[in-house]
Image (cartoon, rainbow, N blue to C red; front, side, top):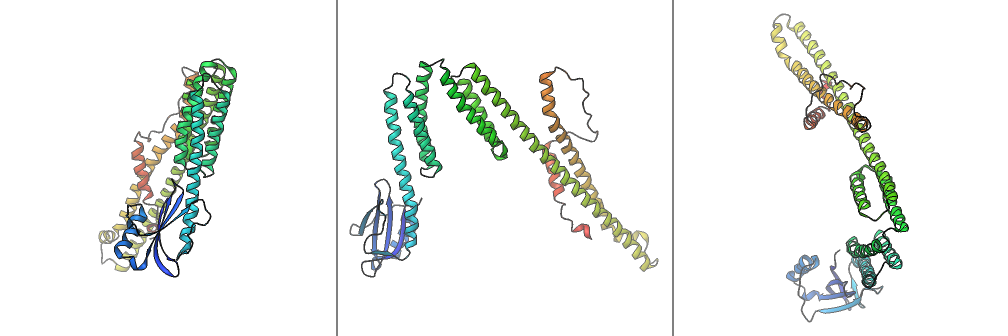
Length: 391
């Protein structure tokens, strides 16, 4: 956020001046310097607007007019000073007050976390009250961050310290209540809440990668954390269900994507075939028309040579249709594999061998790579415009 402003204004009685405004958030002050118009040179003006305003260093003369205003005051404008563009200060004041408020909240939370650290250092056994206080403090930090009352950088810095406190308390808890059922049940609810959040977010495809990583992290933490076997089994079953749902979501999404691509390519083929029919019809019409008008003055070969570009255009489209059909075959093969792979994988886990005959693949389906299929698909998309088909 910009903390330096340079504006024109008046000081005193209609005395025009170039005014600088600086927020010192660490001391909670707003500092003004004013340069009367007769003192402002092009060098000074360029230095203030180009360097100082953008955060650069600039040394002001000792005799420069100066005002200091408390940033907590409602009116930041010094008495006797007016700005030609007061909206600049009003907007800056709003932003600066938010920044000052966020910094003030950060210092307040820092003090709370420091007190929690002191209490943790004096512990000899697990303290439930300290755990609750740390949890309440962290909830307040998250709430402030969500309400934009705390910057995410400061929230992350506090998270590091609060995590150390939780780690220290967890260590005491593991030592003092190694087989405590209530502790295990508390952790169970915490992980179940996290798993539920992952399950609810499955409807957002953009979050699938994050959900997978989060599930893996939860799985790893459940293995390491102090939970009784019964609770671990419950969590692992829930994780398996969400992993399976995520896999199904991805499979359905990929199937729909492949089906849409195949459908689009068939549409392209229809357009190309229509263009071929028009080209052939136009070629035959032009040849017959020319034969009628020339009345034997031109040979059939000469007439056909004159309109061979129509046949060449139709031939080119035939090549593109052949290439697109090849792409469709590859995509259909991939679609079939996408639909059958999870079922076959599940069957292998349950039965050593399956007596059901495998579905025979079409002979024309080849084993070209996905990269080649993508290139052919892109080539097919190049022929989507159909202006040539109207010739």
